[in-house]
Image (cartoon, rainbow, N blue to C red; front, side):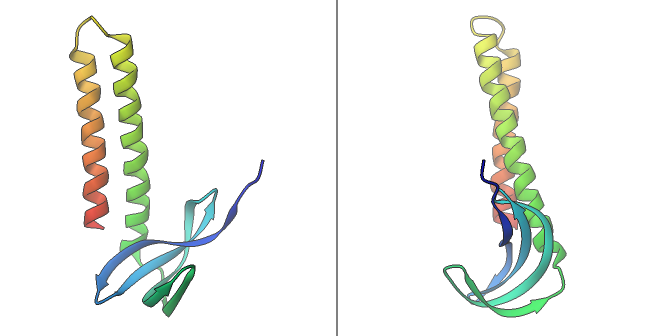
Length: 117
């Protein structure tokens, strides 16, 4: 099994006039683990950023962790919805509707956090 690790930029926030703040994270298997630093990006190309290094930006870090958490919770609620549907098919739809509502709330939370941050 190959384990991919390194750094990558995530958490793009505060975008104005093609400039934004982004944080660099140490990642394992493309999942950001902890922030290494932040950058005020003035221009960007494929795998290349130009700008000014700065201290770790809390809003950018919150955006990354919020997006990861919302994606995981939305996937979990979606799993519960399909699991409940298969288990309770033909029986009471109460549990299925609760799981479907939960998955919709999870996906709405994911969209809301992506737009907000």
